[in-house]
Amino acid sequence: MAFMGAMGGGDIAKMSELMADDMVWHNEGDATLPWIGETKGKDAIFEFLGVFSSNLQTTKWENTDAFASGDTVAVFGIMNGVTTNSGQEIGEFTFALRAKVRDGQVVLWHWFEDSFAVSQAYHGRA
Image (cartoon, rainbow, N blue to C red):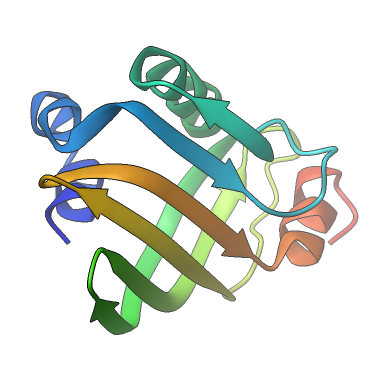
């Protein structure tokens, strides 16, 4: 998925080009984490990404499987990171992503992660 590659490479211009103006970014999980919830619209999503990146330093991101059907893609993988709130490493955890595309632009980014492990590290309980 080109959007994921642009995000991983920090290519903001390419990300913007691949995002619909009405895109929805939704992260499932522990609501005590500042990046959990729903964000609507390109500008708000870029603000959200600033919050996310200031709270979590990704140290591993490996896509293990991807499937597409029509306008929907599902990606599964393994991540790790360090939370800036506690400085603790999360440990490897799994993620799943469901994304929808319209006219070559991402309209939905629905992220699922092991928010228990992430929350434990974020709150210094790991």
